[in-house]
Image (cartoon, rainbow, N blue to C red):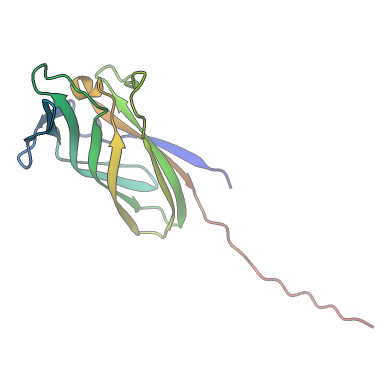
Length: 177
C-alpha cells in the first residue's frame, strides 16, 4: 500500500479571487504598548473542493494578527483560524495521516514565510475514515505576513493511505504425531 498525497486548491477552485475583508464579528481590540489585535475574514466564507476520494470544506476562516497602532504594520506572525471538514467519498476506508497547507498567490506560486516568522502549517490527523465518514476539526495555523496582502488560494497537500491494513486469520490443518 502506498501513501498518496493530493493537492487541492480549495479556495481557488471556487472563486477566481480571494479577499481578506474585515470580519463582522470581533474586529479590532486595543492591546498594550500601542498594538491592536485585528481579525480579517477570508472571502468566500465557505469553500469546498472534491477529489475522487475526499470532499474538503473550509469554513469560518479568518486571519488574526497583532499590528502596530501607529504604523499599521504586522508585529507577529498572523494566524489562520477556522474549521475544516474532510469527508471520505471513496468506496473504501482511508487512513488520513495529515495535511500540509500552502498559501498561493495570484500567479499560482506558494507564498513563503519570511525569516523569523513562526511556521505552523501542518495538520496532524492520523484518523481512519470509513466511507461517508466526516472528520470535523478546528483549524489554527500560521500564515505568512506577505499572504495577508497577496493571498489568492489555499493549497492542501493531503497525505493518506487508500486502504487500512487488514488482517486475516488462516487455520492450517496440522497435527503432531
